[in-house]
Image 1 (tube, rainbow over the protein chains, first blue to last red):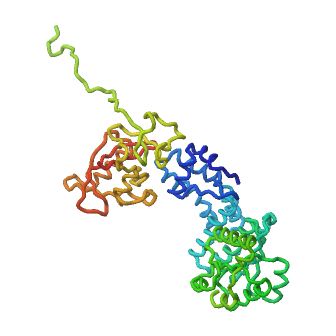
Image 2 (tube, rainbow over the protein chains, first blue to last red):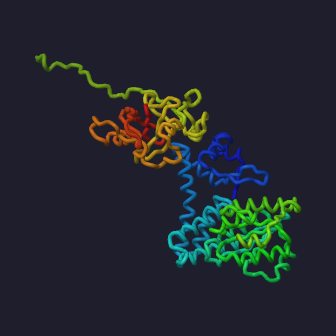
Image 3 (cartoon, each protein chain N blue to C red):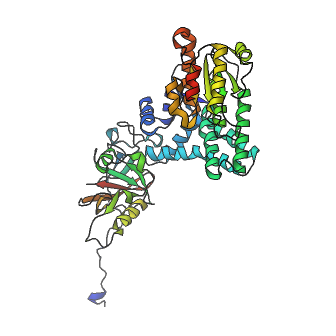
Amino acid sequence: MRYLKTSEAAALLNVSPNTLRAWERRFGFPRPQRSPGRHRLYTHGEIAALRDALLDGLSISSAVSRAREGLGADTNALVGALNAFDSSRADAALEGALALRSLDRAVQEVLLTALDEVARRHGTDSVQWAFSARWGNSWLRRAQRLVSPSIQSVSVVLGDASRDDLDPDAAYIRSLELLLARSGATVLGLSVRGVSNMSEALAAHRPDAVVIAGGALADDAVARWAYAVRLATGPLPVAVFRRGSQRQRVRTTGAAILPSTPGEAARHLMEMASHAVSNPSTTRTSTTPRLLADGA
Amino acid sequence: MSSPDRRAMLRLVPQTAETYVPSQWFCGHCGSPPPNNETPAPPARVCGDCGLGLLLEARADAAPRPNDPFLIVDGSLHVCALSGESEKLLAVAETDVINRPVTELLTPADAEAAGAESLAAAIMWAARGEDEPSRVMVRPANVFGVRMPLRVGACGPPRAALLVLE
């Protein structure tokens, strides 16, 4: 994946960097990522698609629309492969998407979008969904194994409250794990069903933040798990990810509610955990497990 | 002997060469011409003034003035660009109407015209490259009691119809 700085992208499109930023504000495209220093980084594929569209376009809007359509073709190719139960074609479609986007964006814009589309078209009790969910989760686990080891001293424990791989939230939770790992965090993913001997796992891991992700398991199971974590580590910042209709009630516990997209959620969580690392005395929440049990 | 009616003579015939009509470049968003009215290089068609439109060419008598409300429509009657003034006049955002049929924005409003198809016909002819600008009366699609003269001409590249609300 080749990235371009703002000046390089502007030179490729023959416009000024200010114009490129104005397009981002007005059209939401091209949408850059941010470097660790918060500078804009554009993917070469996106800029090249826009340049080609501009050459025979009548307006910036129509060129942006055409460039977007071209990029959206990857999602359609992946949906087609999943509907045909063809895992090698699905792998190839995602590889194609990775040629134009970063892994983070390919996961969010192509893989998760395609899974949502299969679930919408066929329902989550269909064989198409069973195949797609299994393929998606397996792909995300493979990608996580390839992530280079953590560079930051941030550690997160993730309580997985999804039902199984067929739970529509499962792929989002795998994505959050992957994006956290890519942000440099050490992630310990645990099912909230496992409670005993929690202190052994957390003694080895020493987490800076706790995430409860998924909405399939009941509040009681989640509360037991959160209580076990608290007993083992003391109070920690707690965040909730994709816990569905119970979000309103979670607000009363003091637990942070993460955005439902994995990229945004990972960014918020990293900020939360980094803050906890730098200010251990002030950021540790006083939320009691009892309150969490009431809400989460 | 040749009779007087057989005598060779010169006849006046219409001129076959096209009359020269000057053309003008303008920005598809703000209507401003490029600096010094120079023809822009193909990869550098983004307006240097507003940065939100591409520079297009039209006959000088069809091209909009800066800050005129205008639209660019392709041969299939879909909106390809909307100027900043048109966004204000029609109360829509360009990003919302791109690739939508122009009839969602403008409707024929001339009861004395030969038929309601005159707007569509004028756009289609202009998008095909019909050089001579034409005029039709229109109204915003969701507003009654308002009539606006519309100047329809050709523009490009690529070839499209330029609709200037006068």
